[in-house]
Structure formats: C-alpha cells, structure tokens
Amino acid sequence: MSFKRTALSVGVLGAAFLSVSAAGIGTAGAHGTVTNPVSRVAACYAEGPESPKSQICKDLVAMSGTQPLYDWNEVNIANVDGRHQQLIPDGKLCSANRDKYKALDLPRADWPASPVTAGRVDFKFRVTAAHQGNQTVYLTKQSWNPTQPLKWSDLDPVPVAQVPTSRTSDNGYYNYSGTLPQRTGRQLLYMVWQRTDSPEAFYSCSDVDFGKGATVAGAVSALTAQAPAAPSEEQIAAGRSKSTVAHHGHGGNADEPAGKVVAADSAAVGGGSATGPLLLTGAAAIGVGWAGLVLRRRRVEAVRHDG
Image 1: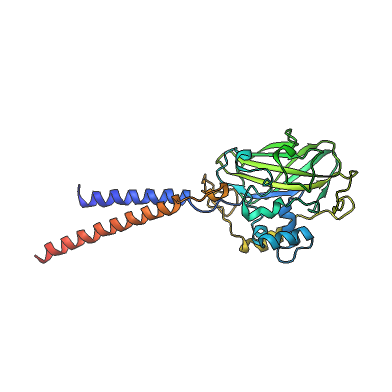
Image 2: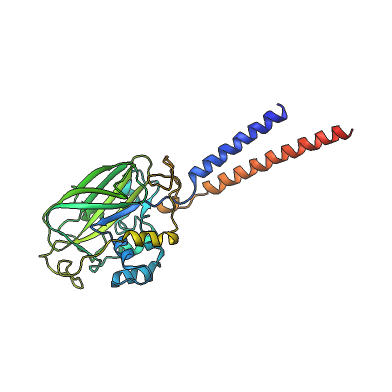
C-alpha cells in the first residue's frame, strides 16, 4: 500500500474514532421542567438559589448546594428507554435516582404547593431543548402521605394527561391540558417525559393542594398560603452562566442545530463508564500514528534528496 493511501486510511479511521467519541461522551443535555403546576426544583430556583425563602428550599441548598437549582432543567436519565420503574427505586422518583437531586425526594409536607381543583388543569412545561417524545403526568392516590417516601404504587396508574411532544415549542413552552380527578389535601403530580428519538427521559414532581382535607402535621394549606412562583425568563437567563449542563447538539432551540445525539451518562443509572476515555485514547493513538507516518516519509524523502 502506498504512503498516501496508508495515511488516508489512518486519517479516515481517526476521524471515525473522533466522531464516535463526540457522540458518545459528555453529560446529557438539560431540557426542562414543569412550571405549572410548578415543580419542586423550579419553585426553589424561583425563590433564589443563593437566598431561598421557604424552609424546604433552604434545606435543599444545605443538603446539596445551589447547583441542582441552577441545573433545574436536568432531572433526567440518559439511557432509560422506558425502564422507569426498573431504574428508579421507590423513594427516589423525584430525583430520578440521581444523588445530585436527592433533596427533591425529601418526604416533607412543606414543599411549595399549587392550589388546584378537580377538573381541567393547564400544564406548562418550560423546555430548553424540544424533543420528539411523550409526556405523561400521573397523580398520587388519595391515600398518599407526603411525609412518607414517594413510591411507584402511590401513583394512580391512570394518567391525568398524556401528550406527544415535538421538536418545536411555543416560545419555549409545551402547553397542554389534563383532567384531575377528585382528591382532597396535598397530592403530587409526577411527570415522565420519554423521548422517542433517543432513550433519554426527564422527570418532574409538582406538589399540589386540593384543600378540604385533613391537615398533615407541619403543612400549610396552599389554598390559604401564597401559591409558589415559577422562575421568570429573567431568572432563567441570569442563571444560565452558572449552569453546568449542556445540550450537546440535541437541538430544539435557536442556539443549537437540530440533530439526534444520544449522550452517554452511565452514572445516572448506577455506574460509570470508561467508554469515553477509551475512545479518546484510541483517537489520540491513531493521531500519533498518522503523524509518525508523515514524519517517517519526510525523512526518507530527505535522505533520497541528499543522496
């Protein structure tokens, strides 16, 4: 094989390694949360990561720091592919079993709760990268106790809303409606957003209060207290520089190109992966080999010329 053909082959192989590594490593992108009824992470972010107002949000920051709030749109598992109950154990639903967001699982009756009533409810999902998929929203059963860890069996298996999502949004929001059944007291809405263009999924917990129920010790009825706020667009923009998440070309927003990229995030499902470092090492090795071929060829040509 000639030098030119050999160098070309090595160069193509190196490019392939680099292409694979670019698509397979890095953190999974962050893509949104429910802002009506406002989710736990969004409500605490709206209070201000550096100076939260409610005790529960203060405790969240004390337990996990401010980063989970600046990364409010990243409660996800990269490679779940519909295996939600298999990969998320009871008591870890709101955090998606991610240690970073473990404070969202605190079984407390003082999470900021939105007042609701049975009947139509309008959902708003603040999306920072739109994807094809399906959002499904479940409501807890009447028997749910907010001071106990949330279990899968606490959710009514009949969803209150189930809608497809697309790669376009309404000015950064998905808007759709659902129907709430009769409930009393504090309940919780659990949203699962499973992408259909990748195995990635996102999760969101929103506390709501139907009122007229027995008061749980330590809880303040949302019907008599001020409803929690969602973060404003100004807050979202101001906190963007402190976010540690990236979309990695997932698309769906004006800043990034469209395209399917499945980012690896094995740590999110219990265990790291050496795939990324190995790919980079392989690409580097091929690059070094290619450079060696070039230098060796030049030396041979120099010797012939001197001779």
